[in-house]
Length: 313
Image (cartoon, rainbow, N blue to C red; front, side):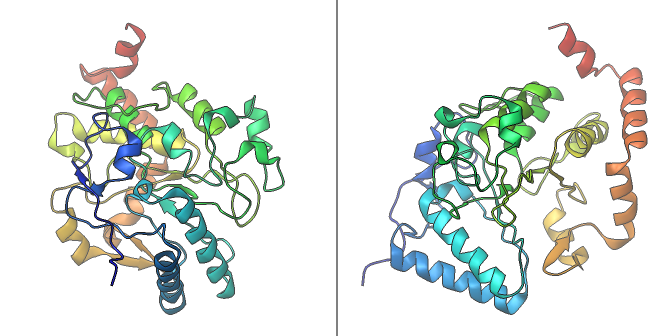
């Protein structure tokens, strides 16, 4: 019997910039997780069937696709289309499929919505925001209905820019990524990403922005880390159009804490904050007054002043 698993080579985990995105796409993730041969129709049909069973039995409203860009892009479009059709049979008219995109913006754009290459970009931001499911095919790679990902699950382009804005050291870049300036970054993302909702046919930016998650370091572990994290939350919550993400608690014991504190919210979703802290945290993350006052007072009292230092570079 032929294996349903791919015998591909492995690349190091999260080593961006050393291997090109296309090579990482074809590889095994850090030697620890085999990948299915999803490009084979019989294997893809089984994956879609199991996904539909999950929707029917657990009443979930979305899938987060881990390491999404290591899935064959056309197969992911076919799978997502099948999953949305299944979800509609159970009354879910706006099923959400975000995915983890660790590569640069140009590469990730191929996976978002119907996909878009650099030669397909709209001429202006107004043209990009006027797109719908009835727009000309010249803006898209795949045919209608084959929307692969609805959004980035944790927007690594924004996260990489945040680490530079907050003056962290290290390898913080990815090939063919969006500019670091926040305004230029959003302009580039808006032109290159397909934001049309696969279910409604209308513009619907739903990238999920975060300052930290379970895969990256904890800000409180560094000097002025908590203040930097709050300034980052100000940007991801109030500046970038999309869905802000809050991870709680930001500590090395996150995984153990999840087992104690995960609380169901709505149908099929979880909030990883302990219930007693949830209201306070979300008020802090979404309050313009709180964030702006905190950021201003901290910048005045600290030697760390990214706005001043960036303006003098």
